[in-house]
Image (cartoon, rainbow, N blue to C red; front, side, top):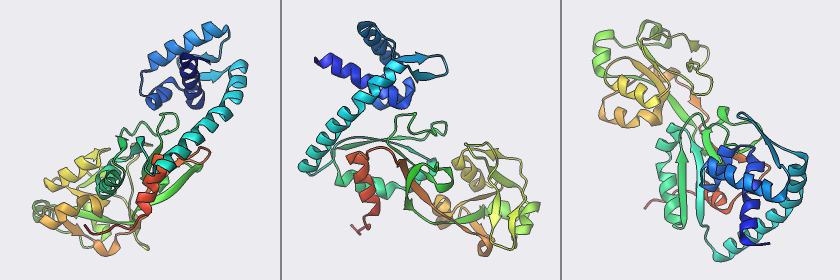
Length: 297
């Protein structure tokens, strides 16, 4: 078998694993059209169709499934052999692809700093596009998000948290609208509502029992938490978000915490990855970094 055949089989395995040209292309760092061209040439050379594909779906043919079943164990063995070499080297290397929520990207600065300082041969690619919710289909190694967004078949470990929820407003807004003393008072205020990028529904404003959820209204709704916070700083209404997100504005006095005694905690952020896959060395290194106690420098 020559080098080009090995390359073609690698392309085949990537497409078969993701059943998506886009996901396989992201994984391999090439374009989807390049993978399609390689696969077409491979099928012509072999004289057999390996995939049935339409504009919406990619599926293995019987011949493709048979080839996958024979190839996967062999390539898994190769992967394990290379992993063993990495362990002998004593330090991981390569590219780690992650999907992270905007909040995670902002909050986990200390984790990224420790990780990249500890593993200088590792490169990290962070995707924040909320439409990339299926990390397997997109060719990503793992994701970081609130627990409620993590699919049941994923392995999940908490990265940071729990966090305290905060309701806050700018002094300029409170000077005009007054200060709410209890959660029920929020119904009479202009509240900046944040909408989920997953189901497009506004996040509820929940408080500790017996208050529970409070119905709020407002003229601004957004799916970008940063816009929500900035408009609150500008005095356009009250915002309900994680305390970590607005801490700098609380410290400078640009925002003021409200109804603090009724604000609940939420579970925090989780690193998640497919449970059926071998965990790449670079991902294992990130997990170790997350679990490592943070030292003062």
